[in-house]
Image 1 (cartoon, chains in turn red, green):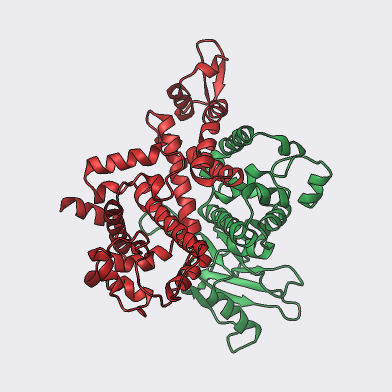
Image 2 (cartoon, rainbow over the protein chains, first blue to last red):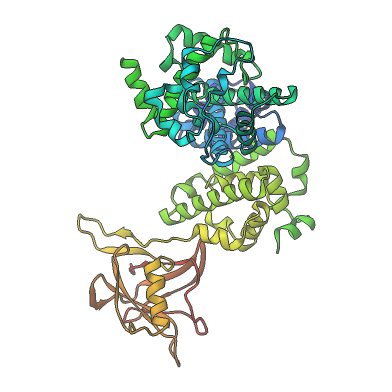
Amino acid sequence: LVEDNLTDEQILAIIQSKAAGRRLMSGTRINKEEAWSLLVKRYHAGLEKLAISKWHGNQDDADETLQNTWIKAFKKIDTVKGHFKGWIYTVLENQFTDEFRKKTSRDEKVPLVSIEARDPWDMDEDGERPSKVERKVNAIHSEQSAEGALFVRDEEGAHAGFIDLARRFLSQNDAEFFLKYQKESGTKSRAEKKKYFDYRSKLMGNMIKEWLVSGRRLEAIMDPPQANALTRRFSLNQKQSLIFKEMGLTSKSELNTLLASATSLLLQALMGEDPDAYISSNKKQ
Amino acid sequence: MDAQKRWDSGITGWPFRRLSIDTETNVAMNQRMIGQLLRRKNLSANLPAHQSRALMALGIEVSESREEKAGLSLKEAAKQGGLDPAFLAIVEAGKAVPGEITGDVLASLARGAKSSIKDLKSAMSIDQSYVLEKSPGVSGEVIAVIFSLCRPDFIQSALAFKNKAGLVGMIFDDEGARVSYKVGGPSGDEHLSLSFFEFQNPDAPLQGWTVTLMSGLEELMTGSTDELGEFRLPDGIEDFPEGAHMLIEKPV
């Protein structure tokens, strides 16, 4: 069809124009609704594939994100200048982030309860010596409340607050399991250990995905070349790098740096400081 | 007719579900949805603020109820409510138009989102009075107001009146709507009524103003104030409708 040969820019011009439609060189008249249909036809399958493979893993949730993405695109189409493809994929990503954030705050808020304040990341499952940060974290009083842990950040370092913050990204069941695992001494079964490490991966993946990848805040805590390299790895990874290994992080120190910085950002945000202002001030420094 | 029955009997038509929707591709459904959004673009842009707000509130209520109470996907909820999934997405985005939100549609939305018509109406209710329009100029005269019947101080004054708590005939000021009012009736031949006056000026009744009693987006009745500024509800109505508000406009 002649219409199929139209470029995105030509279609966009029809949609954004004040006229009801436009006559093409071929003589065919194309209206706004037809122009929109062309864009949906052109991009829906790609967006759907991405939404399923990268984020949702199922058709139903992806469908919903896609519907809302198209509605959002409809509302904002007049702001697009130039590259529609890049823009619509950004709209999809933002839509997913919004939904994720909403879902996280709704389903995964864990009531503040007393926990043994020990950094789950720094378990020495590999027989590694605890780092300086680990020692600091482990030194926090075992009955320290999670809320309290947030506010000892200045004294104890970013990791202290991380324990509480991290729990916000997990479901009630995950958190309960974690608390139990932490509190009960004695030998843990292989299944329990596996579950615990899965928990850690999920936690870290969510944190980083939410705050660093979706928020594109890597540059706030890393040198630009590092941030670029990491961002490239994220975007190239079809599985969205939800767990440590898939994220392509190469060392534990890289992970620790990232987590400490992420925690710092999260703390600032949760303590009422505007994270964007925080990032700007960080950059200036 | 109930939306489910419409669907079952194969009666087609937006915003209810058509039989062909089950076999429709996602691309086609989204194309159709955008078509609907395009057709309502001007209408949506020109809606009065109180209607836009009610539609937004309805969308939020439906969306939250669907996700939190029903735990259903948009498509599944639409199916259970007998609604077009494109319509449900439009409702949740706050882009429905008042004419679409009929009693049948509310019932279908409530069923799909595991909510209740009462909750949906309550979400759309306006719990604060405010001035809708003033005549041009810096100190313009109030010419249209939204008068909330579900804000606490009005409910209190109506209740006090009903209980004859020494407030019969008392005139109250509504700061938000910048009008004063008095509750009247119902007793003997008197109907339940509201009399409106210029703000803090009981000697100046709002004569001949058009009053539209609304519940959410639904217009329950319309009429006008008499020479005493009184607007009477029909015979037999002994209480103000729950969650309602009034649109009060000066005659042109």
